Image 1 (cartoon, rainbow, N blue to C red):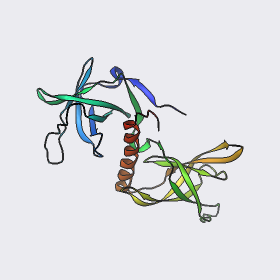
Image 2: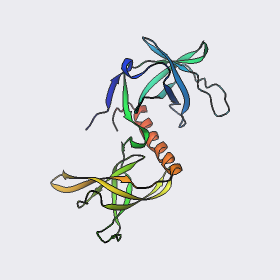
Image 3: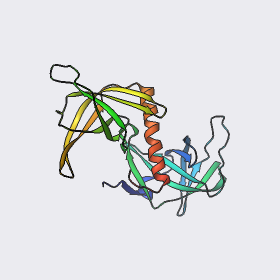
Image 4: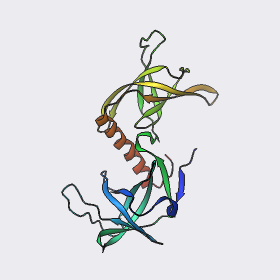
Length: 226
């Protein structure tokens, strides 16, 4: 299993970085900013809710924090310690030794098994028969699925997923980006990695939220790599 890339907190975080926080029992992220990094805690600008009310959880509440880097973001689990005033209202949260480095949100892939209908496009440009299979992972920019035969790189494939929370039916044309042969108990199968050729931005944002929810639940269970 490929483990997540973990980075020393002192190297990853710095004053002024944009941040987002989510209470463990919540599904919404709230905007914040890194105000300071201490030996045993991190200072964040106090987040507010949609009505501009300060968000003040109980001391000891577990939170998920995402901090934006230049070409990535850092995500970690922390504990809310308390609130204070340091020129502006702030949160104090526990400081982990290391944080998980992730790619920009469109390309963060999480492992998840979802039923998917696949229709490869043949050399004449016609759709082949539908085949039901399952995903290996999914991101805001593409997905990987299991297939019984290889598909040429740069060929096209139509995919259809249903019942994704807050997304519903997802029908997309994809480009095959990679094709890897996998041996499972002596049986040869293929992992087909694809990139979406076109996706509505609103749909993509809802898909990204679904992906982040999977990631957040993994962190809540103490899983470093999904």
